[in-house]
Amino acid sequence: MRKYLQIIDRNRASKGARFANYMIDLIAFYIVFFVIMLVITLINPAYGHWFANTHDLLQRLIGVVSYALFSFFIEAVTGGRSLGKLITGTKVIMTDGEKPSVGDYFLRNIIRGIILIDQLSFFGENGLHDSWSHTRVINIKNYDAERQLKSDINSIGAK
Image (cartoon, rainbow, N blue to C red; front, side, top):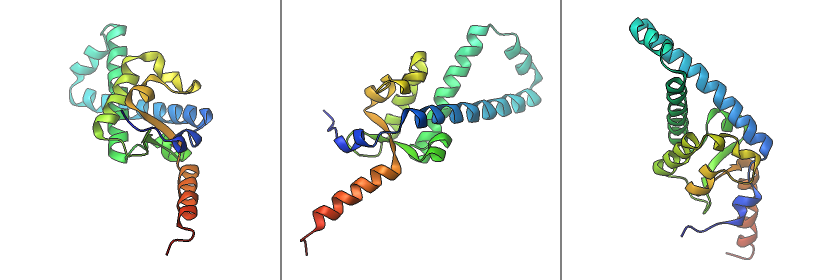
């Protein structure tokens, strides 16, 4: 069982920051997705014709899977900081304070992709993608300040 640190809970990102993260990341995804689709269609026009004529449900499934993979890739490459998280000063961290592994990022984003209502889970305490992957989104500045304060207190009287 993974250790759970209270410092993580005290420094969670606000609901407003999480909403901003979601909106910024969604806009970034649509821009990247549109550019990739445009390039693929320019290379092979038959693909663009096929995609335009596929069933709406299949188009949505492609979009959801693409978004989950996009989010996973960005978080894994940047250490838990998507474009939205970079702008709002937040990042993903494990509940025990450790950096998530690539597998943790994958689990977090696949859950968010599979359970569609989980996309808006930041309005509650924790989404399923955070609970099941044992991750949290924290405010980096506040978290680092509290860790530094604790370190300073612990070093008082030490030689």
